[in-house]
Amino acid sequence: MDNLGWVQELIEAPDLEALGAILDARLHSYVERGASADERLLAERCAFEHEVRRYLSRAQERGYAYPRRFPRMPATWVDFVNQNKAAESGIARLNVRRAYESGRQAAAEAVKEGWTAPGPPATAQPFDPIAMIDRLVQDAVAQRLQLLPASNVGSISPAPEPAVSTRTEEAAGTKSCRMSDVLAEFLKPLDRKRKHTAKGRGEAAPVIQFAVDLLADPRMDELTEAKWKQLDEALPDIPNRDNIPRKFSETLFQRYKYAEATNWSKLERVTTTTIKNRYWAGLYKFVDFAIAEKHYRGPRPKFVCIDPENLAPLPRDAFDDDELLMLLKLPLFTGCKNRVHVWQPGGYFVQSHIYWGFLICILTGMRPGEVGQLKCADIRTDGEFYYFDLRPFDARNGRVAVKDLRNLKTNAAGRVIPIHPLLIELGLLDRMQDLMDGQEERLFPEWDVYKRKDGTIRWSQPLSKAWQYVKTKLKLDRADLTLYSTRHLMADWLDNEAIAQRTRDRILGHASDVRGRYGRKGILDPRIAAKIEALEPPAIKQMREILLAAKNRADAGELTVLKPY
Image 1 (cartoon, rainbow, N blue to C red):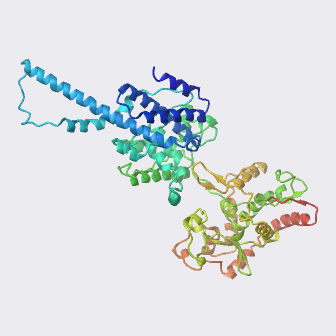
Image 2 (image 1 turned 120 degrees about the horizontal axis):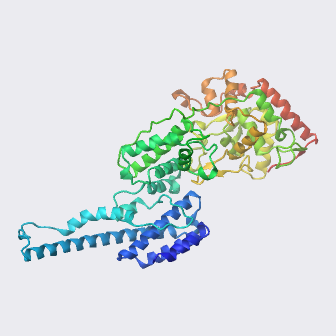
Image 3 (image 1 turned 180 degrees about the vertical axis):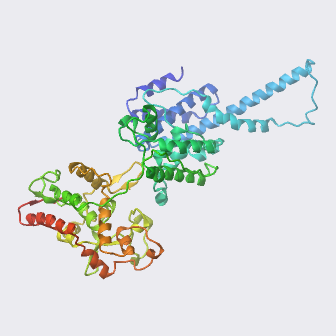
């Protein structure tokens, strides 16, 4: 009955902010009172602790930045848990002492009444009750929270327990923290100087959360070979999102349970590439972290299960010439309605970041995310050829700090790429000069960067979304045709021109063999550069006719030029 007041407040809270305000105030109040030596009050605090854990987990799932709204909550929360752990240890110790004293008095009474013979003198059999207590308290504390009932609070559905620092857990005397606690520490923002070491953790979070949900959030010392095998066998049974209602596809575990409940009606399994490169790789990254931080002391598991029903990876293919020309005949390239409605025909000519994004990808083979990051200073010349300089930094100018390096997909992505003359004819250098005159650093300032919940940045988002629209508009239903098909198209052109494999790899930013890591690090050999810039297969000749026709109309005033920046 004592808990009904704050339970009712939680039920009536309309949103995460209101709920957070209630929890923050009560946490502060509890911490100010200090640890409780009363079992009834401790039970109340433990029930409240459970609800805070639910709130923190839900806030994390929904991307709600509660530390910004309630800056004192993280520190108060740790203090609150520490007080509860200390109180549990004290009460458990006291209970064992009482039981021991009661047993000793009962034994003395039995001897006095003649029910049993007296034992040997205490000096002959020394006994230390404190040592016995120390052996028993550890198990008593570990089991305490599991025996306490948790309140069911309104709209806050049960969720895995969020993080409490492992150091806090160890200081309180518990044997092992839970998997969800280690996950929260795994995803915790690192010190700015070590930020780069957390790369890829956000992508691993969904599959680790799946493991937490599937295995009922076990303690790390409970992760036996059988548990890992259970997880390994479940991963191939996660369906892809197709034909799953949105409310049942927010997490991998929801998708897994939906497939189980519907007996896989109209559902398909994910590809083997997803299982290996996303699920297995994410779990290995998490396990390696847990081992390094001494949260997990067992052997590194090995994941091997693939279901025969899992889909085979679909190789990407290059654009056909007809598909490429269909794209370039759209209003974006020939005359559009206005800056916003670039896919509808009209009398305006807008060379937007989407316009240049498609053309640079086609004529250089660059990745969409690389195009979005381009700076005006990345366009360079050796006096004869123009090229994009995608190297992380210019080694001839000396070393730079890690924080100032370009965000590259791989080490091999740092390279120089000759700029095809068609891009220059369409006015790419004019754009660069206009922006530099306006003190603008980026080549495409209107290209918005996409920040994920884990803080990682994705530059390909605007062009990827545009491609999805174009693919639907043009009814390009070929499954192996993607935005990355522009890279395969350039690779095909290079192969047809018999360009050396080492040069091909350097242009596309592919990893090469050991020999590819040696040689000149600057611009390509002038003869090779001239050969690449002279690439003029029939498709490029037709591209030139379409694109320059629109550019000439704009220069003649037949189309109104609108600047996108």
